[in-house]
Image 1 (cartoon, rainbow, N blue to C red):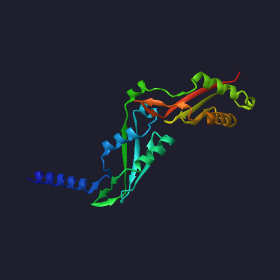
Image 2: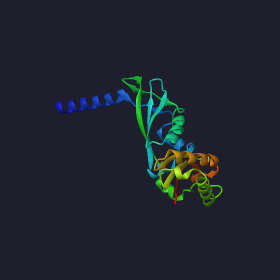
Image 3: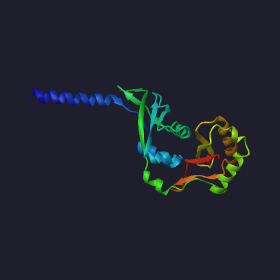
Length: 211
């Protein structure tokens, strides 16, 4: 009898404690939030490769929302995601029936299989013409002052066809300056990559070698 009573009291205590702490949640529900996120945002294809990402959201006692981290982190997508998240409505979390500030982690799952059908980004003038004009431009600069004989330029083509340099390997300030000048002339002259017919951000690598 005592064991049964103790078990009942212990179970009741667990229920009460569970009720004292309630995590914050979006008014439309987590499932609808992630669905709208996928529909409205241009998610980089790299996240499809990773099969998703995790966002950390802080909700204070007044239901003010703030995106505090993104894993894996991508600076341009973070800005877009931050704007989306901070314009959603949430219910504040509670502890002992009082609203308080809490942080929640929300995983967003993506279908990796969609990459197979992705339409890759490409320059509107054609890849060969783009590369030829790039090489022609570089060889009109003071290319002999560059530190290395070969480079790989990694840049992102966003959903509007705009180019943003992500990295240049190996690093060389003079070379990066000339590449930036060239690509600024080509901005928004690319057709973005597409997944399910929707423009998405993608990464493009451009190698060049000096003889």
